[in-house]
Length: 124
Image (cartoon, rainbow, N blue to C red):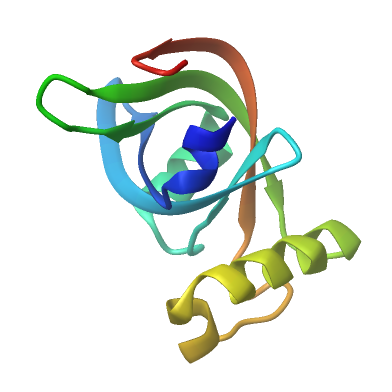
């Protein structure tokens, strides 16, 4: 899906005590999986540990041409191993902020987004 490759920011939603928590995140779309880098000490990470059901919106607003993908999904945490290293290399290549402040296994995890429901509009 060309649209998901063309952007790098999304809004990611989690929940704690029935209170929604939404934050902007950088993401990579690779082999039909959305990957997010996250820090251990964030509200979003603490929420995911208690409830892996989340939502993400990837959109581009242009008057008369709004495009978006909204997903409800389950998240898996990837902290080390081959999958972590493959994902890290993709983030390192794409994002300057990763190259400026690199990290290793068990320092900051990735989230693997496993879509369960999808809605989109404006995308051909």
